[in-house]
Length: 203
Image (cartoon, rainbow, N blue to C red; front, side, top):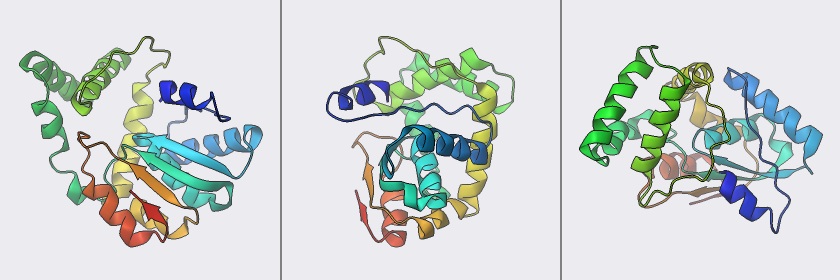
């Protein structure tokens, strides 16, 4: 989201935070410390992909600190909508990239990968998720496989137990979701659960 943040910063005050904690609670509290020390509150919180879920969880825990929540390319909030996600992504890749993605995925799932493998896999998934992917001019973010593995395992359990979507009950602010037509994440998995739970939701 760095290019988006840079463009928005031409007209608005923007803070782009990076999370380093290895648990969901740790990342929520890390974000809380970042916002309360640096932001003009209540703030508009924008999250992309995992950041959308993190923003959702944060707005549930600290509803008075967020005046609007914007979710970009969020994953499905209920697991029943997510069954074909990886197949959709793999089928969008050319044969060479698909084979490489499958190889990397097997390493990641078996705990045999490293940060560079995760980084390469992420680039392949960005191609699969984009209608016309553009290469990044620079890549300043360090990937940390241990953060991914621990946080994603926890997040997946929250979704399976419906604890993720039930966090909507404590959100007070308007919530807006942006979802591209070519996004491999199913829009029904965002729009339907949130429409049922939130009083002020726009997709």
